[in-house]
Length: 120
Image 1 (cartoon, rainbow, N blue to C red):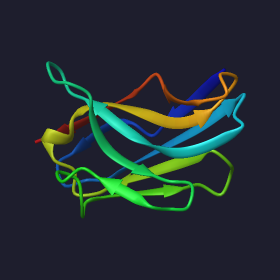
Image 2 (cartoon, helix red, strand yellow):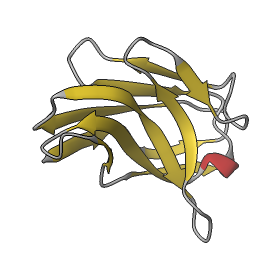
Image 3 (tube, rainbow, N blue to C red):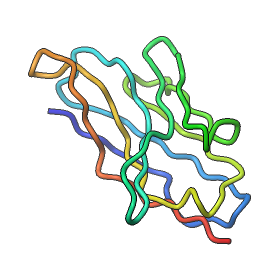
């Protein structure tokens, strides 16, 4: 129903930057929020940042001021600019979208994840 293409993960030194991109496709009739969650080894998945269809943003306290989320020019795309990265940001980052698909109700969908590793 909904597929994701995620890109931009990798290995970076502390203080460096990475940019994650995500494009959602498939049977999408409407999109509410898109964004990113992350999961570190041994921890629960947690919100990083989301953005609504009208540009309202929401950030985790741990990344506010360092990360910037934005909608792409293409439909159903989102980017996450990550600056001043810290080793604690190391995790698998998952693209997220709240959309109306074939179920005709708002549902949450997740990408396959991209690894971000920050070395100290």
